[in-house]
Length: 182
Image (cartoon, rainbow, N blue to C red; front, side, top):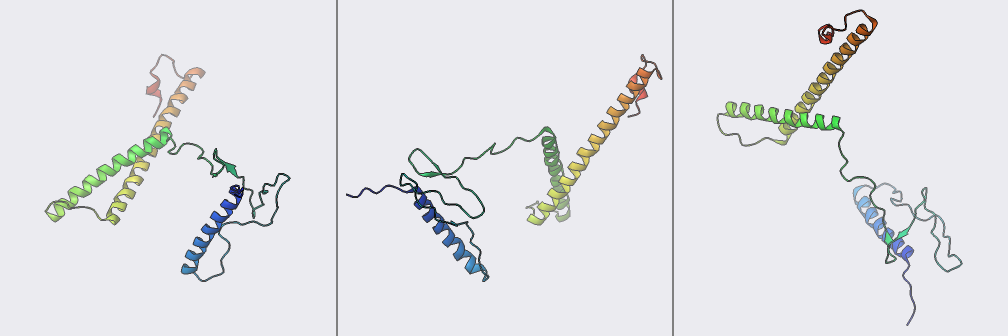
């Protein structure tokens, strides 16, 4: 019985060669131009170390680390970070406004189409759907930024009146909001 050990590097190379062949075959069917190697291959054969294990050869243009799992098989890296990242409060507000605006636009389109046709509304074509969605998004963002500008003006006016009170230009017992022109 021969003692053959599993060589993960050789397994990796054969796997990559299979992937290269599939990609080349697909590309040859699509275009007839000279093909660059889609997956970087080895640039030099390094050989084996003093223990007889194959050294990791260098790849063209990038350094690749091989990692092994508990069974000695090549393992891939794990995903870093959240799969579905949390939205910031600002993004959540914009998204909610977009959804609400889309709902209103779609209902108005539904009513318009029902009145125009004089029969039940059967559906929306993909082109019309995209138009409604784009219109709703623009409308929601415009409303969101208009509200931000209004709040910023009010805040600036309040701080201005507060500074005037601190300087003694207006009385502090007065209603500050009455002096803030926001």
